[in-house]
Length: 270
Ligand code: SF4
Image (tube, rainbow, N blue to C red):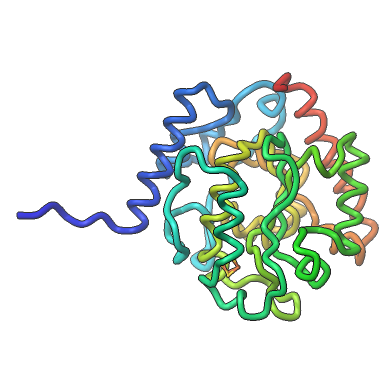
């Protein structure tokens, strides 16, 4: 009797775990194989290293059926888990040709991501808007300029961090990405995270939060403290576009970014 055929989710999970194990064997900071094996527990939050572990860490468990939890291996995108030793350039070259979901039909440019491949801080938004679609770079419109100001206020420059989105092509009329679109695009973001190995991830806005953490809890409940996702401390905060409409929330975002900045400063990681 032939052995049972490995399903795509199983294959993705296996390859991701193999990759994480290899990184861990090389002493890479901040990976949590327990989470990678799909057994997060609400009573076992985990943050590696100094700094973030001194912050309040709360694990948000996926709760709704319509959630889009990236990297769970259930998406319909092409590719598998993160292959060893690939570069952001190689991944981007693949994304530039991608037609895996309907969003490719209306795009001008694929907006892959920008910043340092060794960034300690990774910002993730939901998807490109009009300006980003025209320029091929994330967060370059009004909201992007505000994000840049936030980054500078934290003591960094855009080139020091990495900025990406859940989907790489602009949804029409700037609507939210749909679940199947996020699923089709998930492997690109997974591979970006695997290459960059950020120390902290900042999720900008509820769409990114739902896609990554799989929770639709209100931002007011999530922000202000670290969540953890696959062993990486994650700070949820308001999207800069929301701040343009609700300037009163700027103080909350600044509070969140100060927590992130302080955690990075305390970690001692180069
Ligand atoms: S959004 Fe992502 S999956 Fe969809 S076409 Fe663009 S790159 Fe491909």
